[in-house]
Amino acid sequence: MKLLAIETSSDVGSVALLVGENLAQQHIATPREQTERILPIIGELLVTAGVSLKDLDGIAFGRGPGSFTGLRVAAAVAQGLGLAVDVPLLPVSSLAAMAQGRWRTDRQKCSLVCIDARMGEVFWGAYEIREGMAELLGVEHLSAPGAVAWTDAGSWGGVGSGFDAYRDALGSIIAEAGNIQAACQPGAADLLPQALADLRGGRAQSAENATPVYLRDETAWQK
Image (cartoon, rainbow, N blue to C red; front, side, top):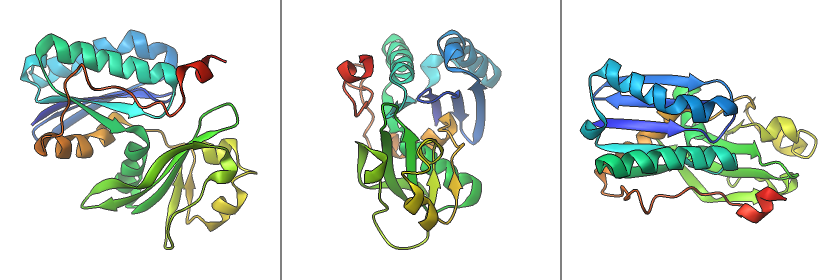
């Protein structure tokens, strides 16, 4: 399989390319650089791997929730490339990617992912690793920090900027957690397990139909 993955839902963006068993990933340090650097990085990864866009089996992108501008960047680039070479798209939850990252780095099986959504709110969701992939327990939420809750008993850890931004409001949740990794951000490589499963399962989408998931409407973002 040859998959390209794009993740720009947070301050640190990234692009990953999987060719068979070989994975390469580059990061983009700031939100401002994401628009400028994303296409050159994609080009560099493809050239280094010796493949072209037409060789790809699919293009994954972080569908959100997250930064409104960042989500539009990832979706627009993925859609443009997908349309140009007729390659299907694989939207993957950015929150799930963070839970996937915790599993990859320290084998945290259950994660409560909570990121700062600004405006006094957080995006959050509870995930459990099942058969190597982060599976959502319930739904993804946009709410006040006080509404955040773990959905089940057992050992779990917290992931995401919301635990730092709203430390006081999330005090009881933080006290219950096995550990908190507030600095974690979603990475393009962690989109790939779900993207591969979706591609193999026939759940890829056309470029026209693959869209971000904001959880907050555009009008609210602009206020």
